[in-house]
Image (cartoon, rainbow, N blue to C red; front, side, top):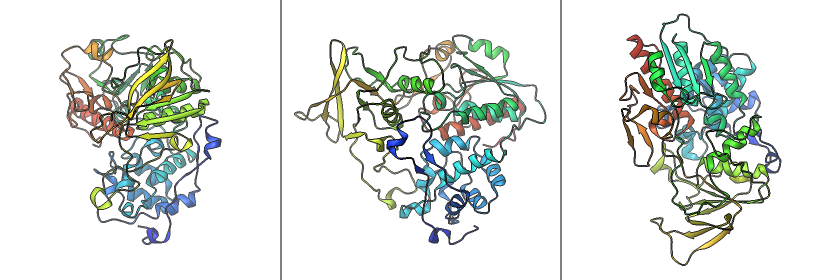
Length: 484
């Protein structure tokens, strides 16, 4: 490495944030960029481990060659750094912003709670590459004459489409919504990732020959049979959109919603689109001036918290049925795997009241309108403890407890019983295709991303899209140079 003693001499530093009082007034990204010199110093902390756990399989799902591009950034060679990063990750500007960074958990320096700021460096490489004009279309040098349809333009669909297009196939991407990006555009708030980053990649992919067909709901507007007749392969990347059933009684009260329609509506507002969409909640949802309760402890719940604050919520309470985790983990027991410990998201830090080991028993109201959430403390088995019941005032409540597979309507209904599916232990409906071939029980039909593996991270979706592209290219051509 360029700075062998860097980890001894340089303290860990990551992006700073705008103060919460400022950032809740807008929906833009609020991280404060570091200078090239500061980023170089953080890259210099990479300690040339004998076994770099950061790039997988425990650390990075796409197997980013993290020590290599850390060294290149330290040397100031941004062009080679982005080339190296792109060799494993099509969209580092996405993951540099919204990945929870399991690579940092797996960093050897995390044994002392001072991991290399890998996520910060990754975002800096991608952003610098755009500034230097290094991210350009890379069209194929020859065309294979084969045609592939990709259903869904989330991270899995985009990654697969870009890889297949660069391999020389004619790729058409079908997206149900009016713009590409899937739930990266319509589910992840702009304050975590502004959508012009998606637009830049779509523009690059169009320059590589990929064609986007938006506003087309495959299974409704076009059938799978039509696509199979027209294309040599069809890849389904429809995501995991079915809300998990909470089982919480609410008697149809106004003011109780699943989380995703709320997030989609706000993203459509920010994007200058109409709030109503055929695929989501028709009734407009707004948190301004209201007491808000969010049920769930994951990323989607946190996104609801941050969105509610920006809309002017009076108070936001987040309920988590899990016990409050410890402040720190036992490193020798857990490392290099993702640890269960107390984590506070930027949205939670904006003023959320967090309640742990609390069950949501019932949504209560008057005249058909939500007025409160009845809760109780739970024991170690997550069973309500008698006598601990209480009510939290609420004008608006969101259920954010995860997703249980792709929508049963549309594509899956059109595919019919011939498409074999299975339910995993978490209730996700995954299509029976392994992570080597990605081929379903139907001829020509492949599947990747959350639709296959269940709800997961953007970085996992990118990996699945890349691997599915390799499998399709191999099946179509008998050989492939695409990386796995």
